[in-house]
Every structure is written in C-alpha cells, then in structure tokens.
Image 1 (cartoon, rainbow, N blue to C red):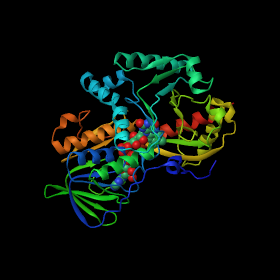
Image 2: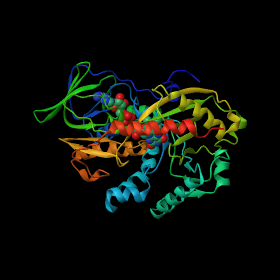
Image 3: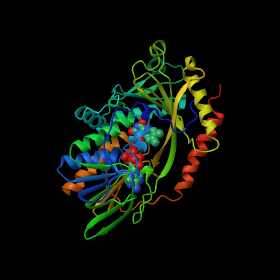
Image 4: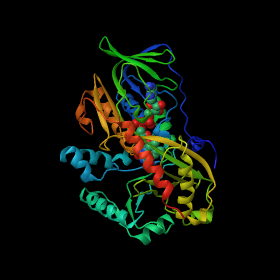
Length: 425
Ligand SMILES: Cc1cc2nc3c(=O)[nH]c(=O)nc-3n(C[C@H](O)[C@H](O)[C@H](O)COP(=O)(O)OP(=O)(O)OC[C@H]3O[C@@H](n4cnc5c(N)ncnc54)[C@H](O)[C@@H]3O)c2cc1C
C-alpha cells in the first residue's frame, strides 16, 4: 500500500477537466456561489440555466472536498430511515423531502446523460448488507418503512445477498434498484464543466476570505485580491469550510472516512465479486463500504481518520476486513489510500440556513451526491425566482451544534476502538 495518506483513486482515474482561472480584479454577479462541490456546482448550473449571472468561487479545485473523495454511492433518500425523518421534521416536511430525494438518482443520472459527464456512471442498484443477524433486523425494519413509502426496495435473504456480493460474510441485504455508483470526482468536475458551458463564471484557487453586506449587495474578497459584488449568495462549503471574515461558518460534526483501492481484480475474481456491479455498505455501527470501479478495482473503506498517530489501526483493520470478506484477496495489494470529512448535523439531517439575501446548506451526513445536487439546484431556483417553496426543507435562521469537536472525537475514538478489536481473524 502506498505510504501517502492522500493518494486518491478518484484523482488518478478522473476523466473530466474544467478549465478555469483564479479570480483577479473586480466583478459583479446576480448570484455568488462559494464552494465548488456538488452543492455549489449544481446551484451554479441551475442559476445559469435560469439566465442569471453567476460567479462561483472555489478555494482549491472543483471536487476538492467531500465531492471528490466519497464512495460514489448515488443513493435515493437519506441515511436515516423514513420514520426517523418524520419524527424529526413532521409528516408534511418529511414526506416532501423523501419524495424529492427518492427522485435524486434520476436527477443525477439525468444530468450525467444530458451533459455527457464522464464519471463511470453505473445504475445497477445498491446493497445495504447485514453484517450480523441484528443488522438483518434493522434492514427488515427499513424495508417495511421504505415499502410503506412506495420505494421499490427488495429484501434479499442471506444466500441471494452472498451470491451477489461474492462473500459468505453477510446475513442478507436490502437492494435498492433506484441507486448506482459513479466516479465521484468525475461527477463534480463534470457538473462544474456543465455550469461553465451554460454561462456560469467559475474560478478555482480563489478562497473567499472576507464577506460583507454593503449597498444592498454581498461583497466578497478572495485571498488573491479578487472581488465580487453580488445581489444573492449561496454558501456551499460544508465540511471543508475555510474561515471567512464576516461570516460564521455553520457548525457541523466532522466525521472521517477513509478508503483504499486494490489493483484491478482478475477476470476470475470479477466473475464472483460483485458481478452485478452493485455498490455496498453495511449495517455495522462503524460502517464499512465496498464497490468496484470501472477498471475492476475493489474500493473499500470505513469510518476513521488517517491523520492521527493510531491510523495504522484503521489500515491494519482494512487488510483484515478485505481478506475476511473476500479470502481470495488475502494480503490485498492496495494501490490507493485516501480519506475525507463528512459533515454531520446533530439530527443527521441536512440544513438550509437563511442569511440576508442568501442561503447556506450543509450537513448531508454522508449522503451528499443526490441531496447536494437537489439542494444546490433548489437553492439557486429559490434565490433567482424568489420562490422559496421550491426548497425541499424549511430554512432555519441559525444553527448551533454544541461541542461539535467533542462529538467528532467520539466518532473517531469509537471507530479506532472498533477497528482495534473487531473483525480479527
Ligand atoms: C469519504 C466520504 C464518503 C462519502 N460517501 C458518500 C456516498 O457514497 N454517497 C453520498 O451520497 N455521499 C457520500 N458522502 C458525502 C458527500 O461526499 C458530501 O455530502 C458531498 O460531497 C457534499 O458536497 P458539497 O458540495 O456540499 O461540499 P464539498 O464537496 O465538501 O465542497 C465544498 C467546497 O467548498 C470549498 N470551500 C471551502 N471554503 C471555501 C472558501 N472560503 N472559499 C471558496 N471555497 C471554499 C472547498 O474547497 C470544497 O471544494 C461521503 C463523504 C465522504 C467524505
């Protein structure tokens, strides 16, 4: 395995490029979007489609944050099951959100097709796998709730699930045919390219360092001295928010997730390991995920950070987990290893904050491909048309998350301890 903590498969295999330059000088726009992940790029694309003058500023490269680092499971809905969404949002808002997010994969795959985004798009469904018999009970409960909401999910018994994944280590699975897998960085860059081709002005390497309201407009300054004056604002910086003078970034709990990718599997291995190309994650408290990429690599990951002294615990666990799931991959030869930060909210639900003539969205809690695309587009439409009814959830005025740092430490300690003691063979 490479010793680099940030050797990402997605950087290696990305086929999309976006030609932009840092912002220099002074410019004006109807809408300023800060952040070039799924949320920001989807917002810029929608606003440009609506004929608005859009300027998007990204601190690094498009897809630098969660959008270029994730597993690439383009799911329908959120991580929370429907009844828990209803308990938190109430029946009306929960039903609206669930309906919009059920259709999120259609939006994502529709954009990929429309803009010919090169991102290894595969729509063969996902398998939420039971890691133990208790996990199967959780899946049965989710199945009942999802079916009651009209979702076309199927509950697979152990033998069928094991055949589809190519392992005897799972106790069943919940199959969702609406979902699929993508090359996540390719999708982020492709959305950025589509926005630019539709007329949005995009600038990479342009971190916003100061924001203020002046003369009825937003005034933004970048680290390299560029300035934008815009009527409306969308902040889409999520778990990767850099400090902006004059703007308090919404508080989220950063949860780390790391992944590794093998060399391409052999044709014989690909005959039985995920032959149907579903993307998978499991019911473990410290969740794991696995899928194939287009080259036939196994991409496997779990909660955990690679940046601390005990990160070897996570990578040792990954070797054990891989060879337990797939004994033919004993001593897996990982070529890539990288990690990212997930923005969790206290309720595991995304939030839209209303700011003066602007909106900030964050906290997809590990489900941002579909939701980021939906929320970004809806926020742009709401601001450009003035119709806030298009937003999928009610907005809030402020968001406090006490002891966010401690909560993050709690998740990381839990993941480290679990990986230290569990799944030993
Ligand atoms: C490891 C991992 C696995 C995941 N797996 C999945 C999955 O399988 N399926 C799924 O649906 N979701 C998954 N997620 C969640 C998903 O990736 C995120 O929810 C989604 O990418 C968030 O998109 P975003 O555009 O809101 O934020 P980001 O993609 O994080 O983009 C924010 C951008 O803002 C920029 N920025 C920050 N500060 C400034 C500033 N001051 N000025 C200008 N720009 C700034 C950053 O550089 C960054 O590019 C995963 C996340 C991670 C980290």
